[in-house]
Image: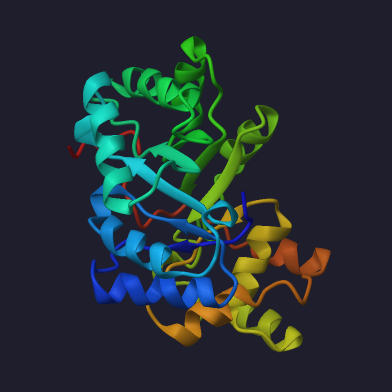
Amino acid sequence: MPWFGLGVFQVEDGEEVYNSVKWALEHGYKSIDTAAIYQNEEGVGKAIKDSIIPREELFITSKLWNADQAYEDAIQAFETSLDKLGLDYLDLYLIHWPVPEQNKYKEAWKAMEKLYKDGKIRAIGVSNFKEHHLEDLMKDAEVIPTVNQVEYHPHLQQIDLHEFCKQHNIQLEAWSPLKQGQVLTDQTLADIAKRHEKSTAQVILRWDLQQGIITIPKSVKKQRIQDNADVFDFELTEEEMKLIANMNKEERIGPDPDAFNKR
């Protein structure tokens, strides 16, 4: 799985998502992350189809929405996503939220394990799972989740969850790594960026990578998409890493997974 990719949350289907994915692929991105609830899988699929990059070189992720966590619904939802994307298989498929109120994520996982064993998905994982959700899922799982994609940025570092995932060989992946732009004006980050002649966004994304966290920033602007990916030509010092670590507030912009029950 590539360490860096494009997220397309809240990117409109059609021309907007098509261009975002097209520009990303042209600039060397190989990983694209979408979801059924984003309602833009068709645009993502069209951009992939029109790209000159061979399918086997790309890493495409989608997610199972909350209303489809019953076993048969999960199977059908996967097939619908695959059809919209115009693909023969997915590289990664995630349970989007644990939705504890309906308590069906284990049922969904069984369906995903079958799809994995049938060769329709190369890897299966979860999104927005806390430690206790993972512990519960793994009690009965035949396949351990490969990835846990969660909200992660300098103000929400989820240190215990990251450590738990490392102990169980679950790869942590950051969504909203820039906190929807809310951390870009931080003076600590600005000072670090100035030293490296980089942007604050590039500093944050580099910070993710140096912690061994996959990151998938979203943008619909061509230059921003290009700039976000230019993070492999510099390295943050240990002191700079600590300065960013000290910014942690455990502050979310998204829902708490224990309370989010939208279907």
